[in-house]
Length: 66
Image (cartoon, rainbow, N blue to C red):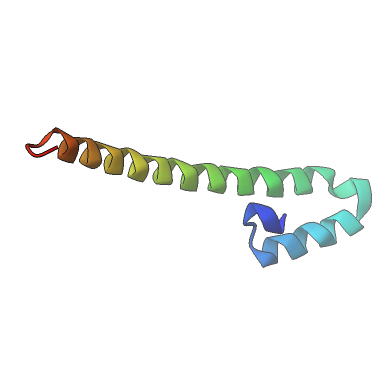
């Protein structure tokens, strides 16, 4: 989970839940789904930044001298 960028507090919570066994299955799933949702939102923002940067670069390429 560390490789996914999950905060240490959430990793520790996940480990606690895992130690509880199958009774914590849905809570662990929820924790993972919430982390995925946060990662997706961050990725969407980064992709928008990349698109804006690409647009600006393309604009410069169309200017005289290139």
